[in-house]
Every structure is written in structure tokens, then in C-alpha cells.
Amino acid sequence: MNLSRRSVVKVGAVGALGAALAPGVASAAPGPEPLPEELPTSANGWTVETRSNSVSTVWTRPVAGTGLEVDVRIGDVEAILVHVVRRFHYEIEEIPRVDLSGWQPLGKVSRDVPASNLASGTAVRIRPGSRVKGGFFPLQEVVLRDVLADCEGVVRWAGDDEAVDESLFYVDVGPDDERVRRVADKFRAAEATPGRGAGAPVDVQSRSRQRRAEALTDVQRSA
Image (cartoon, rainbow, N blue to C red; front, side, top):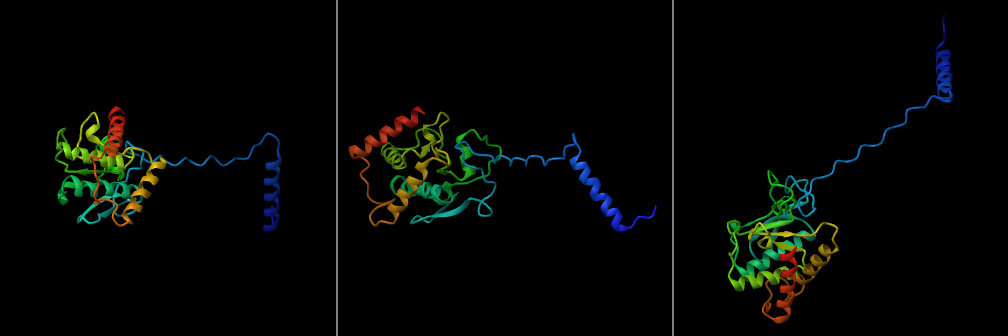
């Protein structure tokens, strides 16, 4: 049989229409879109980063007035952790460059332990070689407790953890906790106000500040 091109196209169209209308014949429906893979998080619920300073939320940030810099999660976490580092440097002990570190790859560290928070840029180590208990003089710990109270429970010191690590300070709440933004805004406002912010004179032994610090210590030690 000799069929023209127009006839072939017409027959094909009619056949397709008949198949679509035939009872009991279902057309193939598109399958559901695959769900995106869940990104790994550190112990505190923040997303782990595989690198810093390139396609990442973690960048090297200066610690103003100290000559130090540290790899941390930019934004609110940066404002909080840099405040902790600055107060430590000014009020507890001057930090040499080699004694401050931030982000590091997760590697073989379990995502269930506090040290994994380093991999999400939400933790810092100060004096990494001083991890065992008892590394601070009593007055130094008084100041340290005041720094934590400043952070309103957003930052935890691993010196209070069951597996003691006095060098580790980490964000202890998830990314959706409203306190993160509130505390970060408080520190940013203080830094922009003369006579306030990290390094400004603070009476850490005033009864009101000590009560605040003691209350937070009780909560974090019992957590």
C-alpha cells in the first residue's frame, strides 16, 4: 500500500486518540519527585559544612581588637561566638593565635558528640590542649560563667559536659531557636555603642550578675 505522509500522520493521531479514550486503559502518570536528601547536621542541629571560605556558610572572621581570626558560621552565630572569644581574650586570658580554632571537617567524629559542632561552624576551641577539668583559676571561672550568662543559654561550655572538654564552647540550641537572633542582635548593638561590648569594664562579682550566672550554671550542669 502506498500511503501519503499526510495519511500516515492522520492515522497515527486517530490511533493515539482512541487509546486515550479506550475504557480500562490508564495513561502513565508522572511519578512523585524524589525527596531531597537530608543534609547531615552536627549534634546541635546545624548543617555540617565540608569546607570553609568557598561555597559554604563558614568563613574566616576577624576577632576585632585581638589580632585573632577564626572560622565560624557567618551571621548570628559569628556575632555570638566572636563575642565569647573577645571576652575570653580581654577578661580571662590572652589567647595566642595557635590556641584558637573553629570549623574543622567532621572526619570520623560522631555527629552525636559536642565536638561535631565544630564541623557546622557553631563551636570554637580556646586553648585546645587544656581539655581536662580544672584548667581555670577560680576568678577566671567566675568570668567564664558571666560570659555564658551573657549568652542567655545559647552557648554551652563543654567543661560542664559528662565528657569534660574545657577548651570547647558551642552553640547549644538549634537554628530555629529565636534566642540565637535575639542574643546576636544584643551583642551587635553593644559593639556599636561606645563603652559597651566585649572588653568594656564589667563587675562580674556583683551579686546580680553572679545570681544570673549561678542560675544558668545550675540549668546547664543538670541538662
